[in-house]
Image 1 (cartoon, rainbow, N blue to C red):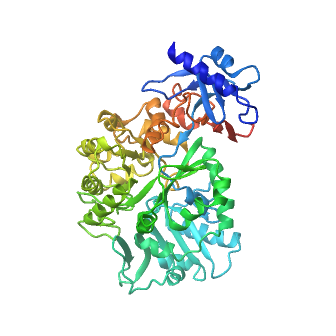
Image 2: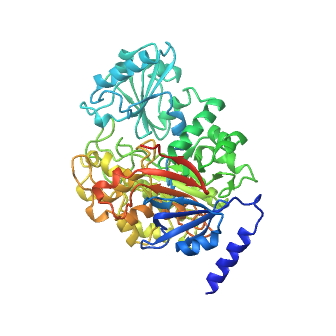
Image 3: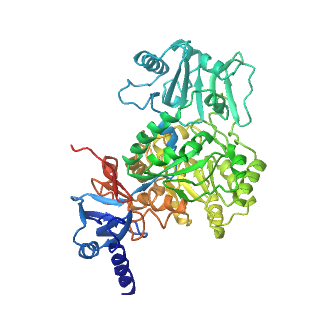
Length: 564
């Protein structure tokens, strides 16, 4: 009774505010409303939102009394409402950069199954868009494992497409690229060039660069490529934001924010356009400049933007064979060297020092680690910084793909939030089985084992590494199947409610926002996604077909599916 009296007093106080201070309340009713509040599914019949927050969630009769006679009614017409999805890890900035390039995911393209087909679509793209000689041609979503040759396209093969354009083909993992001669020249890379520490430059039989750059070597090319103007960024920000809203996201992440983008996203023009909450992870290469700013604040919003934590990269991509392991890849290195278990992007003392600096400043650590040896490095670095679960610092290990079972206890001891990547089972588990034993591949993204160990996990798309598709993520975490029908770790599959937690309450906790979003509960933000059917009652093979009907951010409809 005491809580009911307090709630009634809260309603009365809020509703008594002048109309100029608070808009009319909105009642959401007429469908299934899953609150995500608790470890078991709970539903309510109505939700009242006002002033961007949830005032009430529960019985419809009480909701109507609380909202008053002038409330607007949002009838769900039998649809299902959930808290807005929270992006645990993706690259918001990449969504802006991809416009204008050649996207190999474009369903309007002919199938790209071999090198000749790849050459053909690049050639057609240049002709169709009238790209002038000397200009750049950027290709996205290239995956050499999808080609029948099972190897990278080469510099010479790109030169055969056009020696007069600067062609860069970006690997889907974003950890590798292939460049033609004109692009290599623009980046001042020659046969005499040596890779930076943590980078690889592949060569042909004669020792010449073959155009393939991996890991830190890619930065040499990316730095030479043209950058978006502030006007282009602003225009594309709006489109990127809508792309996230269309998936039901009300919170996005830029998972490796470069200095120029950091200045843009925190500038007044971007803040004026952003409606989605955007968490930025400044890349560690700019750490010293950030540490030199004594008044820089992490973890608090300025309108819809906040600095969340520092992003560190410890290894590469397992599908590109640059992830760092304690065991060898069966197929060797990207250039065929045996034995090969990858290598770290930095050494242990460097990471230990970095982790101490970030932790001393009170900032959160986000660490990219795919292979188990890279995860060992992360654990040692957290220990060197003195981080324990009791400190509640919540370091996040992004991907944690090839985690060993023994590392789960270390995560629990330190308070790590694993940001898992269930889409990996669909896209690359078959590739991984050519390199590692079944028991190793079956433990990728070990959601159930993590839950049993007391960890709070999230799930992510790593867009643009895999598509920005929230229902596909739900399905991959529930099915864990590959295109060949092989299930990777059936015991690690999630049920629908647990899969939804990895898109709501899990990432909310990892971002220190569990008392602000991720659930439908009085006092939290009125962030909702409305789906055409209930994931809890939809068969696993029907999960992908669920449609987003509407996305609501702080009580405002920010995206709605077109009728029909």
